[in-house]
Amino acid sequence: MNEVEAEISKEKDWKELEPNYAIKIFLTVLYSLILLTGIVGNGVTIQVMQVLQHNGYMQKYVTDHLVSLACSDLLVLLIGMPVELYSATWFPFTSTSGDASCKIYNFLFEACSYATILNVATLSFERYMAICHPFRFKALAGERTGGLIALAWVTSVFVAIPLLFTTGMEGHVIEPDVGPVQNLTFCTNLREWWGVYRASIFVAFIVYMVVLVSVGVMCRGMILVLQKTMRPMGGGVNGAEGTPKHESARVKAAKKQTILFLGLIVGSLTVCWLPNQVRRLMTAAVPKSSWTMPYFRSYVALHPVADTFFYLSSVLNPFLYNLSSRQFQQVFVQVLRCRLTIEHVNKRTLRSSEANSTRSLRPLLKSLRCGHGGRSTQTQSLELKMPTFTTLHIPKDTPAPSPEEALSTTDESRSISVRKGNEPDETEI
Image (cartoon, rainbow, N blue to C red; front, side, top):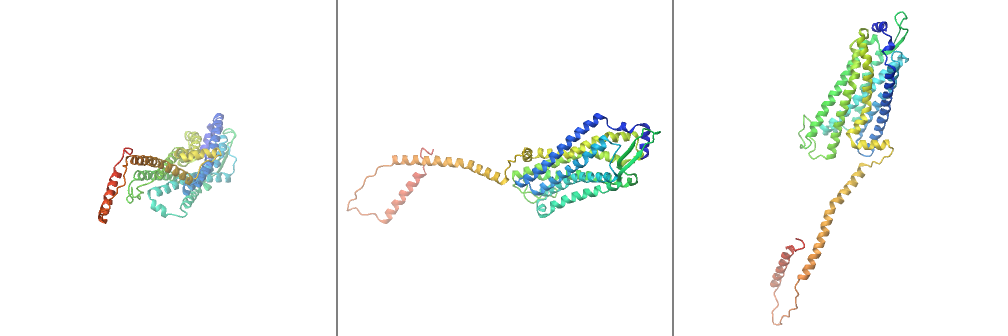
C-alpha cells in the first residue's frame, strides 16, 4: 500500500469513506434499473434493426453499424455494472477478485467502452461519405462497412491492451497500533507501471476528444450539404460533391434523421462520458503516493456519479433512435408487444401508388361521365332542331350536276357541319 493510504489510515477508518447504507441501496436500485433497461432496449434495438432491413426500410451497412453499436453497449453494461456494483459500491476496499480477473475486467471494459465511441465515429464517417461525397461512396464497394466495424473494434482493443499490464491487485494490512485491523485490497493501477498507465489514460482521452470533434465536423458538413440539396450536379460545398437537383423527399428526410441521430449521440457521449473522463484523469494526473485527503475524498465522491452517467450513455441510444425515427418507434413498440404488423416497403409503396392512381382517376372518370351525358343531350337537341327534308323530284330535263359541282357542294356542306360542330351548345356552356 502506498504512503497516502497509510496516512489516511492513521486519521480515518477506511469504512467511513464508504457510502452509507441508504446510498448503497439507492445505487443498487438505480444500477439495476439501468442494467435492465439497457439489456431490454439494446436487445430490442438489434431485433428492430434486422426487421427494418428485412422489410427494406434500412440499408444493410447502416444496420451493421447500429447493431455493432448496440452490442458494444450491451457488453459495457453486462461486464461493468455487476462488477462495479459489487466492488465499488458494496465492498470498495475489500475486493476478493484475483489479479488475473482484475486485469481481464479492466481490459474488456476499456475495449467495449471505446468500441462504442469508435462505432459512432465509423457510422458518422460512412454517412458523411454518402451525403457529401456520394460518387466516392458508391465507388467504395465491397467489404467497406465490415472493414470499418472491424477497424473500430481492433482499435479499441489496442487502446485497452496497456491495462493488461498496468492494472492489478494491491493489498495492505493495517497494523492494530496504527488503526483498525483492515485487510485492504484494491483493483487499481500498479506503481511499477505508473508511467505506462498514465500514458495510456491520456492517449484514450485524446481518442475520445478526437472522435467527438471529428463527428461534430462531419455533422456540420452534412448539414451544409443538405442545405444545398437543390444545387445542380457538379459544384459542392467545401469540396463536397454535388447532390442531385431533384432529390426525393423521402431521401432528404432519411438524411435529416441520420444527422439528428448523430448529433444526439455526440451530445450524449459528451455529457455522459465527461465525468468518467475526469475521474480517469484524476488517477493519471497525480501518483497515488501524492494524493491528499481532500483529493482522495473528491475521487471517492465523484466515482458513483461518473459511473452512473457513463452507464446511462449505453442506455440512451435506443431512446435516441425512437426520438429521431418514427418508423423505428413503431417497430420498437411492435417488437415489445410481440406483434409485428409492418409491411415490406414494396407492398406499402404499391398500395399507396394504387390509392393515388385511383384518386387521380376520379376527376377524369367524373368528367367523362359528364361529357357523355352532355353529348347525349346535345344529340337529342340536334335531333329536335333538325329540319324535315322532303323528296325533291328533279325534272327529267334538268341536267345532272357535274363532278366538280358535286364535290364543291359536298365540301361546303362539310365545312358548315364542322362550324356547327365547333359551336358549343347550351348544355356545354
